[in-house]
Length: 247
Ligand code: FPP
Image (cartoon, rainbow, N blue to C red; front, side, top):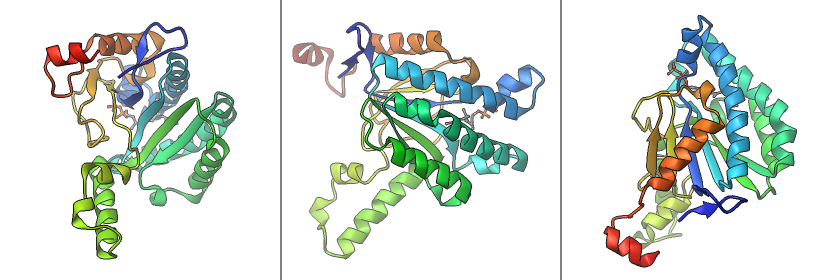
């Protein structure tokens, strides 16, 4: 189920998803405002994207802003929006030169036209790249995604495009923002929660939770997560013997 990296050594998950938590605590520990933590978090994003490409990850999905994050203080929310717009512009060429196809998942309608323009530009610039897909989840919620898929099925059923028998797990999956199952989910910041992230896609994924705060997540930490993943036996409901026989 794994793909090899360029050197054929360590196995990388095909789809890696990350809940980047702990920016606020990182800043607080240093007596800084929370936004400083997010800035350092953005640097950790750049690092993680580069490492993921080098390791041979096919798809990287990052949770950058949840639908619940709007509840944060206004200055933090607007600071995050400015940071997103800035990073998308400053990282544009590097992402493109590295062959990364950038996509955004979530309800983008709530964001400013300035941010939406930066998003559209990056998406169309990189749409033919094939080395790695980078999904950035903003204003995303797993229940919202499932509701959207259910709505789309209901509309097609009502219009006679599909019948009841066509409502299968596969049909549901095709209508999600990201169809690919997650192989490994990493969460930094120590909380052991899924926080409404990729609920359908994480049905069989491995979970790796680390106390490391997101701004401190470097290549060494990345390797620790991959080593954990490589040590897991993924049975998908089968017995150990069946897995061994299939290998
Ligand atoms: C969670 O830490 C982090 C966020 C809600 C924001 C994530 C944003 C970035 C990493 C910056 C830029 C990202 C991109 C894709 C350009 P927290 O604030 O909940 O930390 P805490 O739990 O310590 O308070």
